[in-house]
Amino acid sequence: MNFEIAVGHGVRTVSVTRQGSQLQVSIDGRTVVVDARRVGDMELSLLVAPAGGADPVHSVDASLAARRTAGDFDVHVAGRTIPVQVRLAGGFGRQKKAGAAQGTGPQRITAPMPGKIVRVLVKPGDEVKARQGLVVVEAMKMENELRAARDGRVRDVAVTEGQSVDAGALLLVVE
Image: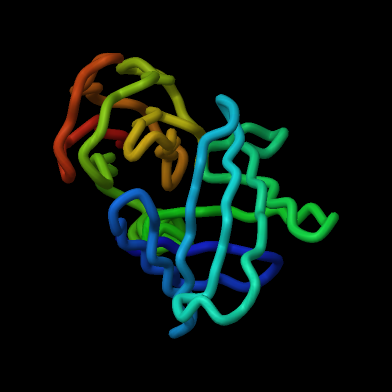
């Protein structure tokens, strides 16, 4: 699965492949092996080793950021706290492209991957602002808040909390 990770002003594409109980992670052509363990509801502990195993293993802790927006984490490395954002590949800038360029027509919010609807944050008829949270989907034990690309009104909500959805399933429509 491919992700984009924003650190500071840069965005990096990261490829993650599960291999048994570990993850093989490629960042800018460099591959590392990650042993990830959940140590709390909002915290992960990672052991990161180069794929060849010659260099030392690094310990990295990640916790859901205080602002509690899905995909926003505080990563703790060598005594430093680094804020990062994690999105599915193509997720950064998606709102700008969909909203600013077209400006009209309904916005169809679809599931980015198979998962479960955790929360529906709006109902039909609600006015929404650009980047306002609409629905929260849990996939791969992570919650992803899907947001409005631009101001509008919720026309239809096609899902309910607790419902399982397939990738690409229509969740709601904003016009």
